[in-house]
Image 1 (cartoon, rainbow, N blue to C red):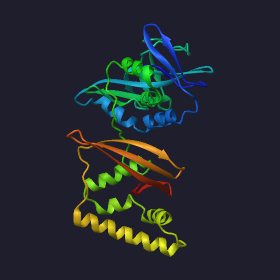
Image 2 (cartoon, one colour; image 1 turned 60 degrees about the vertical axis):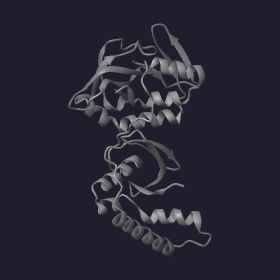
Image 3 (tube, one colour; image 1 turned 90 degrees about the horizontal axis):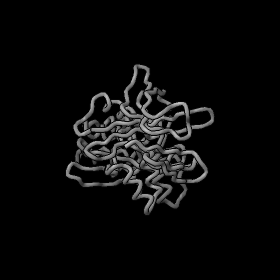
Image 4 (tube, rainbow, N blue to C red; image 1 turned 30 degrees about the vertical axis):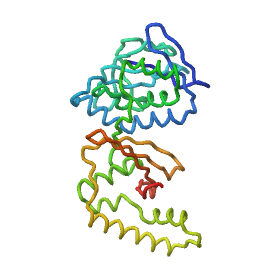
Length: 291
């Protein structure tokens, strides 16, 4: 199952290797790949937890490591991963290296956490994680896509599941923190996950043709806050227990992201919602739905 993906180079290129999976060269400036690696590191806590205490149906664990050999860099999958108390990752080299010569197939090596570029779990035949694989697959069509899927040995690639921490350090974490508050019926916590002033500002700029001043923004924010409270009190808070979630991010600025949340329900149904998130005083907050 190990698949090397080389993500440096001026253009995408597929290099054949006899007896081993193909190598896909990706542009260094590929935003999709950069986000995939960031996402892998932000959710690595989940991989570590599952590796140490596998869940039912989890049958395969691998971590991708950035290996440096002088000026050469290669990203290689490590099998049988384990960890030490300092957060370093150890594993067995799962593919024959091409561009680096300081590691070899089946060698046991260790890397620091900041050299982790991806992780993957196969759970009941589905790919969990594998963010760089998903980024590469998204850019393939036709025969290249079919060959890529074959190289994965029948692993199902669907929306997946993303396990961000429910905090205010990321847009996705802010959404999860809000949904955690819903599950706990904690109105105060849910209010802390939102910013009605910024939501009011966005709403007014979209819908009002008159001059917008601070008083109008504050008055609108208070209306939004009271409406939110009333809705929660009269209709109850939505519940997310048992729902698996994946996220897609659209960065509009360093402070503003639209996040698409994909919810997979226990009965197999799917729903999608686009949420505005905004970073205020170093913390991400959830605004309203993006129309």
